[in-house]
Image (tube, rainbow, N blue to C red; front, side, top):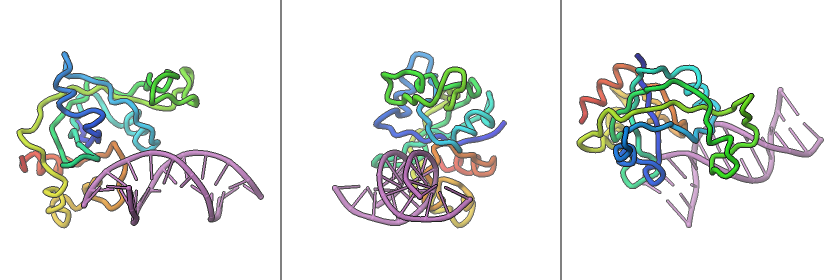
Amino acid sequence: MNHWLLKSEPDTFSIDDLAALPKKTTSWDGVRNYQARNMLRDSIKKGDSAFFYHSSCPVPGVAGIVSVVKAGYPDATAFDPKHDYFDADSRIDAPRWYVVDVKLVRKFTRIITLDELREYAGSALKDLLILRRGNRLSVTPVTKKEWDFILAME
DNA sequence: GCCAACGTTGGC
DNA sequence: GCCAACGTTGGC
């Protein structure tokens, strides 16, 4: 089982939005970056765990945990001309973009903030991709050690 | 294949 | 709103 970090802008979709869904399950759609796409399509497996990270908001940080309930499959929003995520270059017979389905495991009792994570940028979390300068990937791998360390910060 | 221009991300 | 960093596009 592998670990990941998924970014979402809470204005668009927050962990509370996920918690409010009847089955607390959603398709992680709208990813339009090839590196992130490759991970959704090829690397993330059913049963993997991921941090739900809030970005572009007053308090960026890790908000909770989700589990992958369905591995990569084509992103239907790319096929819908009326959808914000529509991409005419993604075709049903040759999909360009992918999603995974995730289910809420739990919302943390508090946000583990980016500021706190940074305190360990020189030690336990020195390789955490989200702390790298200029990092913009919305899907990144997290090692087991990083995962356990961040969990213990709650 | 190079690279300038442009668009997007995301913290502040 | 600003702007650094990065990805993508498109002319050559």
